[in-house]
Image (tube, rainbow, N blue to C red; front, side, top):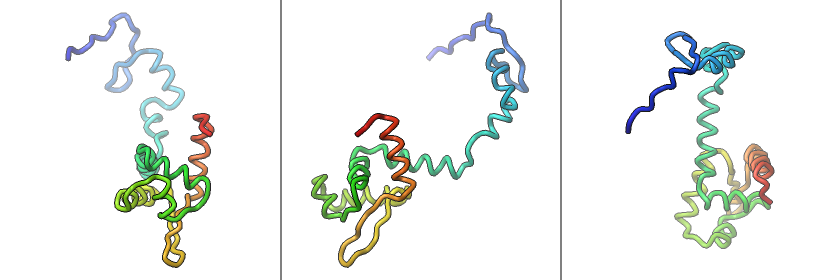
Length: 134
């Protein structure tokens, strides 16, 4: 793939080792330049948590599970009946959601009742509102 040439008519400014467009250099100066932008990044543990949540939500099956749990806490047998899937496949998806910290399971007799964590419920409510999903 051929490399595109930068338009030589764009005003540039030297910022450290970078030659960047003047308007970008001016706008990032209010953030403390490149160093200020770097400092504004969320901590790595927050980025990793976001990654786990977005990966957990990237699968339609897991979004359906989360949607069911938005209604009420449920046992595996009800989730399985709603989604019509094998135990092993459902277990796989539930484990991903548990590892991401989006659901919790509580043993009640022979059953495990799954529920959304408070943080996951708030996240899903905000996302539904943002995307105008009922």
